[in-house]
Image 1 (cartoon, rainbow, N blue to C red):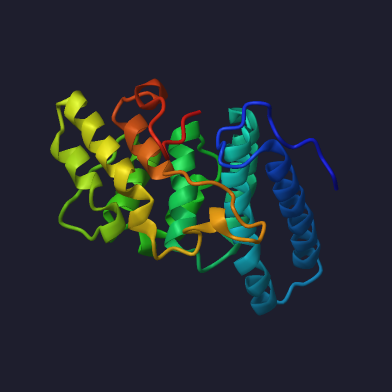
Image 2 (cartoon, one colour):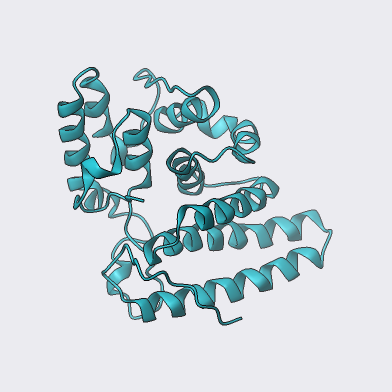
Length: 232
């Protein structure tokens, strides 16, 4: 299933085009296998076990395609596919849902994301960041409710919203968030994947930062050159 997968405009220059081409070919080959596995069984428990890995394959694929320079149209197509697969799975992780919702805001994608938000209300409603993004997606405006939980690695986003009405200070606060973003995720499985001997690195991007920036009226141009900001 070899494809010419990498755009000339690679976004993540920590790896080269050859690396991303190999990575993406492996991901697409694995995804094809999981499509076959899913189609071959109607057993609910077995399908859920397959989907556990299938959803994560799409998670990594979306990040890698962004890193490799995929354009907006391609990313929207892949995001829709990822959401359709995620709808079949009953136990999405926080990280998986956050990526799908953040990309939806970034890309202006509606599609299946509304159904995914409805299905995963138990995960979204009690979480400050997910709840905010859901409001942006569904209502065009999110509410940053400091009465509900926010995981520590995202806590610096509070300062962005505390600066409401001051676009310059909001920009500075988001830049400070991005400055600490990587090390605030030191406990995540993907942390330090760049230095792995295995072919597992797909990119380091704070997609939620871009979703917040866009929701507040900032543009990618404002963050040109800011590390970890996923500018389209």
